Image 1 (cartoon, rainbow, N blue to C red):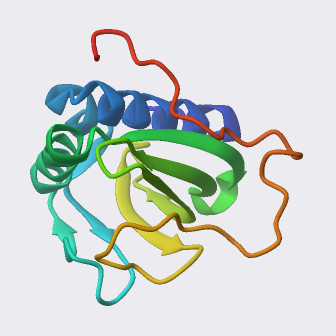
Image 2: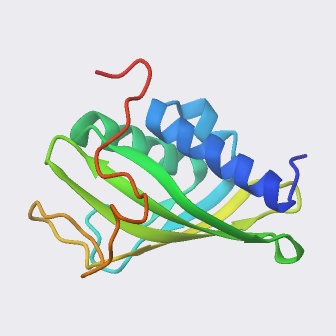
Image 3: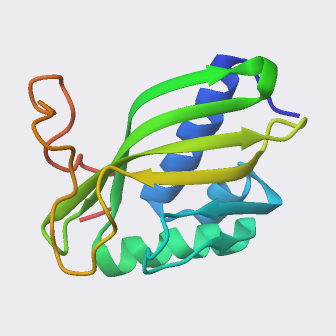
Length: 154
């Protein structure tokens, strides 16, 4: 059983993101209930990921295809509802772009992720573009502007 306090949910989401960045199937799946679902904006090319295994395989494919690297930029939580929200950046080095967005997390009583709802700062587009909020001072507010180095990845 995992901790569903603010710190516990943040630790689980951080471990999940570490698993995404490391393309570590077991680490990602270990943070989720088997039936977890990851929703994306309508029209997103990957569609909905249904099941912890599908979520993990989807992000492993993104690392392989796009060189994907994710950061958690902000975090808030409501332990009484077992829900948390993060703001993230998804760097896609192979395309030379990044996008930003938010995700809403719902946790089970066991403290595992059951649902992720992704909201993009801009519509999902198939042509390479950087997705950001217009006129928002990401750099001035300390958001990452380049992908961080991930151990074990070139």
